[in-house]
Amino acid sequence: MVNAQEWLDQNYPRAIRETISTIIIGRNNENLEGELKLEGFTNLTDFECDGSNNLTNLDLSQCYNLENAWCAGSKLTSIEFLSHLPHPEKLRIIFMIDNNFLATDIDFFSRFVNLECLCIGTTDINRIGQGIYNRFYGSLYSLRNLSKLKELSICSTDIDDGAEYLPDSLKTFFCDNYRIGARVEAINFGLNEYDGDFGRDVPELKRAHQRIARKLEDNQTAFVHALQCQAHQHREKVGELEEQISQLRVQLRNQKAQEKDVQTQEKAIQTDENLEYSSIIQITPKGNNF
Image (cartoon, rainbow, N blue to C red; front, side, top):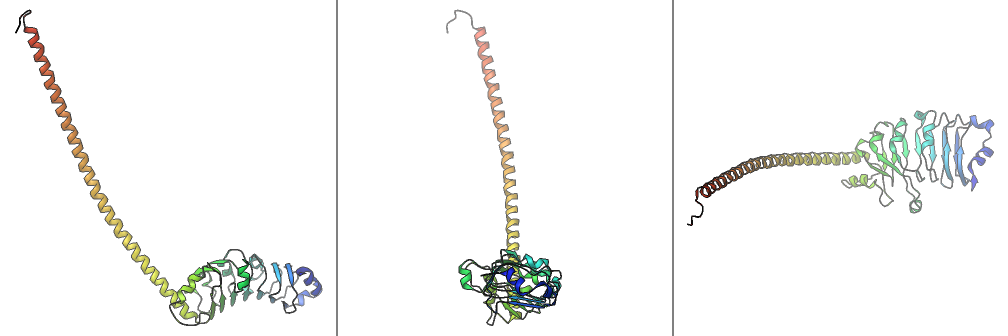
């Protein structure tokens, strides 16, 4: 493998960098590895790096006119380098399939308002088997305002809903799954409702997911209504039980009061008997035998 920065410095002297509009890496099996900092490429519009390279990080912060960021089949782990682009609105293509990006919400890409192509999935089964794959997650709802988006690939990611919000401009959509447990399978599930080419029939895909969304909403409404009815019935039952408890308390108080009256009467009777007995003793003459 060749150090990526050393290769760049040797092949693109600083004196000519402002004149460079395109850099393509991979056609000559350069086998680059490590970080790559594109300093001084102020007029670069297209950066492409394919297959046989193992780049771990990119610095595009001086690429003021970048339109195409293409780095597939490498070992990038963070997409943050795109957040440092001086003019994100100029970017038209993000092609980053088959890397090793850490878990990142796809809401990150909503800032690139003029995107035409966004490919961030993983299709290389061998890399997936080694635990090397892109870990993007979130909802396609985040991309609803990308009105120029024409191609989207989220294969084997954990992006799991929001297909009904895909922009109308989209022509090609790939969401195949090659990884066990990938949550993108939830989007594939909706495609079972019709026959067609999932990669091209985007309008039908959206309609399928809209049907599912409506069905889920209807089910949720019915479920909430059922819960509300049960809650009302429970409240009525609780009211009945509280009334019964109140009545029992009254009965208990009355019973205690009756018991107290009985005890008072018993004490009064016992007192009268004692007084009567004492009177008899007092009036009986001494030595008188009965």
